[in-house]
Amino acid sequence: MEEKNVIVIGAGFSGLSAATSLADRGYKVTVLEKNSTPGGRARSYSAQGFTFDMGPSWYWMPDVFESYFRKFGKSTADYYDLKRLDPSYTVVFGEDDFVDVPASLDELKALFEHWEPGSAQQLHKFLEQAAYKYEVGINQLVYKPGRSVTEFMNLRLLLDVLRMDVFQSFHKHIRRFFSHPRIIKLMEFPILFLGALPENTPALYSLMNYADISLGTWYPMGGMHKIIEGMVQLAEEKGVTFNYSQDVQEIQVHAGVATRVVTATGVFEADVIVASADYHHVEKNLLPAQYQSYSDTYWDSRVMAPSSLIFYLGISKRLNNLRHHNLFFDEDFGPHAREIYTNPKWPAKPLFYVSAPSVTDPSVAPAGCENLFILIPVAPGLQDTEEIREKYYNLVMDRLEKLTNQEIRQSVVYKRSYAHNDFIHDYNAFKGNAYGLANTLLQTALLKPALKSKKVKNLFYTGQLTVPGPGVPPSLISGQVVAAEVAKEYRTPVST
Ligand SMILES: Cc1cc2nc3c(=O)[nH]c(=O)nc-3n(C[C@H](O)[C@H](O)[C@H](O)COP(=O)(O)OP(=O)(O)OC[C@H]3O[C@@H](n4cnc5c(N)ncnc54)[C@H](O)[C@@H]3O)c2cc1C
Image 1 (cartoon, rainbow, N blue to C red):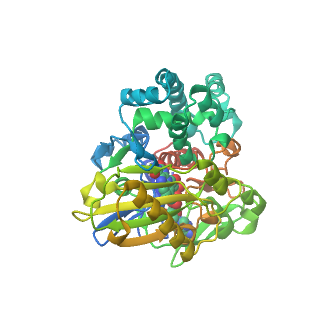
Image 2: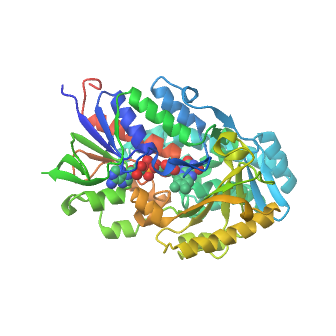
Image 3: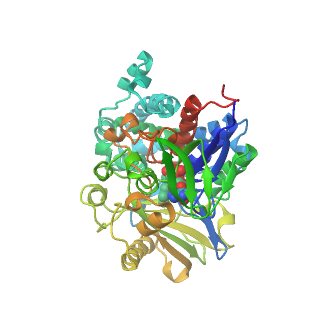
């Protein structure tokens, strides 16, 4: 049987995962990436002695990473050194009013009990259910390609799905267990990772609380990019070829079969194509109109996960009162959420997040300095100008200085901002989205853009706009799921 040439477009988490899984099955895999370095939204860069992770900073679901490397006979420890953070993160509610969320479950229960008598027992019950959802959700459901309802027809799985509160909202679910506003804020925070409001997110996703509380918050020393470096090394060990600075401009299709991928500087023959670049971009910009599966109306009606305004800052001194992960929840999330989801506009009083990896890892900043990543979640599709960015820089710095009780601005020695225009320029992101497509009930599993093209026989998709959804662990899984689908249809000597 002949060796099959697979072209993977994009070297983010999903592309790397797909490429490695396919090479491991005996395909000849070539990755074409428009940027000069791998990682996609998880790239990193260095400036003035600071090393910044550009996107993800939360390492959750360590089992998903471990099981990825184990599939290839490796372990995360072969590539990077993981550290569990304690506290997992801190939540700032106001001036001199913050809570360190402890890594220990007993300590967390004590904290809950202090706020709301009886809530420790409630947390125990809640986590038992969440553990079950995690087990079924992460070990079974997310590995389903979502191509047919028959995948869910096994009786045990159907019963499991019914037990998993797929049709109840997370918002209602959490209030059945707790009433203290702080507990609710803490428990609703992980849902923000899914890109939708708790009201619109199925209660199934209390599995995120299990990930947060029971599995913990981890950090790969050297930064999140160490995962990417490990994945690229593993891919190369499996024989994947990487071509950077290859901006794909066209997928040529003849009689419903994709034959070539054309970049600004080359032409690549393909038997199978796996597109991990943003789905909308591939459909609308790389394919001829008659081979696009979804209309403009379809895309306009999708609920996108938020975009972000980010500041990468180098500070020439160590800062006080900051942990590795800091959530500034000193404003009410309601209005900010509406400005992201219901009435998209720049927020009046945004919540924001600060990561200070130099608190854990001296290698990411020069001695005596601090590395800060500040993120404000904002609606996709907003007008993005320097003036607006600067306005929010000042707004956030005013609050940060006040809430951490110190002067910071005068010590900023490196500053770069990043928002919609950059997401579009760097990743061809639809409406400048940061996290892909939101995980709402109507955009789950079969209801997501399909992982296989409806019009082009040998074109597959992977990544945060298709199954299972946004985030690093789902993107890792997405690449493995698409590789299995390719293998079902295009056999190789190894997979026969
Ligand atoms: C600011 C930010 C913070 C985040 N925080 C977290 C977090 O803390 N934890 C977490 O789990 N997740 C987080 N996420 C989400 C997570 O990073 C993403 O879900 C994941 O990295 C997406 O991977 P992907 O492979 O689907 O897409 P991408 O990383 O976007 O990869 C797609 C690749 O395709 C390339 N490409 C695009 N067009 C072309 C073309 N025409 N030709 C060639 N190549 C092309 C792009 O350059 C890119 O490298 C965050 C994301 C962002 C942006």
